[in-house]
Length: 469
Image (cartoon, rainbow, N blue to C red):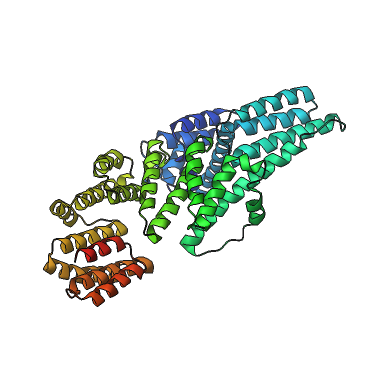
């Protein structure tokens, strides 16, 4: 029973929702079966929900003490419970959507031939919508629905009166264009990850219209358009500059999830430029985006900071030698990382800070005492250890490391791209060690290899070591 749909939905409810649901069950409008109320009361009375505490036979005996266990009877009651839970969830979610509520009341009054009351409700809904701080797809779609109800009312009252048809068309087209551009950005991300192409209807027409009125004045359309163009034409940084400036300017108009999504698009653009561009400009750009996203809590999802974001912020700051800021950041934001990963990622970032500051002894002490559960964190930690061995000229340790790391890469189930990257790092580090002194031709050949070999995440470090030789 612990894995049943009933329990899985029930455990989704928070304390406020649970209290409301048990009140809902007691209302004869929603439930006429006292056994259903007793079922949920029993579940709610368990201190911990487990295989033992809500065993089917135990539940049945509590509900039907004088009857022999009947699995079908219990399953029917559970099915009724699932239906009741789903009805409650629908009610609870619709209760939060006050705009939808106003629209439905307006429609009800209009169909019941109460035009004056319907008109009052329409004005109330319109006023409530205009007070909404968020101006994205959902806002314009609700505006379209409210205007649509008003159009129906005026059509019923008189065919000679002026209509709000233009407002209907404008709001619908703005909602459609915004959502189309948003998913166009999502499609690019999917294309890069999964090598999948998508046919996005009307996209070309939308791209042609975005700078025309009224769309040129709609921040959400402009933000998604700039994000799409930046990701499509990464070499043209003008689109990114517009995106960054407008994101900071209009972020209050976006709901938190969409704001986080656009931050992610801007960050991904910077990372793409960092990986393909010799310029260090975008390291600073992405670092400032990260800092701003932390300050306004955009990067926190339900008060949780992704462990990958936590690590990437530290990496960007260290590349910019923002050591004091990173030293404060690591412990300050570790508490927001998922509990299962918190200590290992805090440990790893601290090791990176010691390494960046040249305190190899402290960095190595930390690295050799922990085997990280996270595969990619483990790979990065091993790479850092290799760099320490190289920079401290620990050649015996380095030879042993090359052998063990190569075997590790062959044994682990690592995606081809990542395995190739780490094997390239090993191969080029070996060539640095074997480079004949004062051999300009061999030196140039090695530099060409470092410059052109793909994939290679440690290109900057390898070039720096070559420069020092």
